[in-house]
Image (cartoon, rainbow, N blue to C red):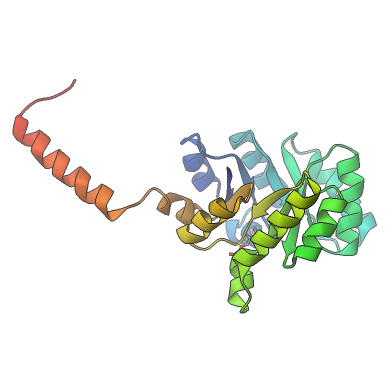
Length: 217
Ligand code: G3P
């Protein structure tokens, strides 16, 4: 299972990349706004921090302009993955870009039928939004299960990139279902390493080690 971080905060990306556990980065216009930085400049910096795909989203609504924006974005670095919305124009753009060897992440997916279309358009990644699905009274994890089943039925190569994950249980459930990739905010990824009994056990070992009066180095 691949781990992407969902942020445009380069300090956070640098810190997580240093763990060796990070496989890629996802950004969106909201995260770029939150960073307060220039879009192209921040994407270029992120591409230098990780080897894996860095999703950079087009903002146009029509195919022709999406293609022009994608042209600018893909020139930034080899690991740029163009993010397009799940609309007919977005799917058309996905088909054109992937046919040309460019990685594409189809975003804002809220139904299994949408995911089916993205796979047929040759998407590298499909991004179903689990948390936003839940927020609106739907079952985000059931959506991941449905997409997994459909993609397996037809051996589609599109990777399921579970997005809009809000807490560690979302990550656990996505791993059990078999999502190929998860993307989550830095805080959620860091939370995965936490357990109260790990902290408690460590405290006890530290205290007892101090009592031995020994050192290793
Ligand atoms: O980047 C797409 C997705 O992960 C956004 O998450 O928390 O804004 O619903 P959220």
